[in-house]
Image (cartoon, rainbow, N blue to C red; front, side, top):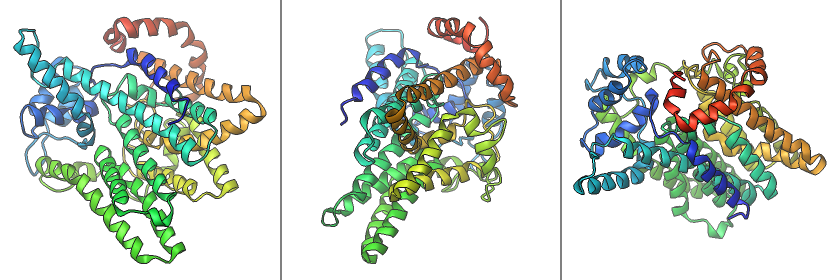
Length: 455
């Protein structure tokens, strides 16, 4: 544990009033629906869950109905669900506690129904998601300090910058029903355990520890399929270590244990695939969206309307810092972090919907927060030694830019389908500041009216 973690905890408590306990987006409904379907209905037919949410917002969820209710999986005839099951598994302890509380309250005569979809269940899941995001940030700070020997203040500064200065803030508060906060947690957990093993002495290496690494990698793949590719990092390290030590049998043993544990963690996902899609794999409707030559990889990063670095410029600083650190220190683990970023860029560039035009920011990269944090901490550490005020300005700019984009996105004063960045940047200065206090007040007092643009 690092001493400054209390500041992360304080920030989390202060953030909690801004967490939305409601699901609005199609993806959020898909992720959540596993829980009532399994706990209440004991099936994986989501028709009644989808109808429940659509009935509460038939206009806003018109497109959702057309995709997920009017169409069915060709092999099973069941409603479509593209979301993996991992987030629901991680949320399940919170959900089950809420279910128990609702059952007890209903028997006591209180006006609540144990239907699995009412407000206590939504509160439990949204709070769980925000909490996992916080735990992922704690792990990120520990990774920097304990394994890369980053000075504590720089580590915390980088962690805060990526929390409040990237789309992570949006997906921990406005839209916690997505998988991105849980994704950050499980990837950070995987990286933490891997780094711990990579630093152990040869005499202290145990196969069961590599089983945990594999298990966390499989769990990451069940939260978001592309997160399973983070297992490449310990896999590549094992190959390099085996070559250096001339120990091929150890490579085979540790790799087999890691792969076997990953498979065990993926069993719930495979069974869910079979029940929903009729096959032990993702829906064929999703597979058609992939072009593994990654024709959009450059656009994912630099496209004028949808690029990662234009939406969140602090991440460009972070990636450049990571590359400079790698070149100056030649750390094997830093090199693996670069590989992790490259692989996720390739995967995002392979998806037809690479623009994520309806989403807030490049959310598919949020599992890389620990990777970005290493590069950003390197930059901030250097700035703090020379011009401490400049380090503070970098963080302040990142937070201001991100929060202002959240205001523009929430008030719908940007065209998310076709961004024109000069106009967006001008509104950051001219349109957002006069509305900021009103937005905060509206968000805390009448959030739904604010989100739906009726106030």
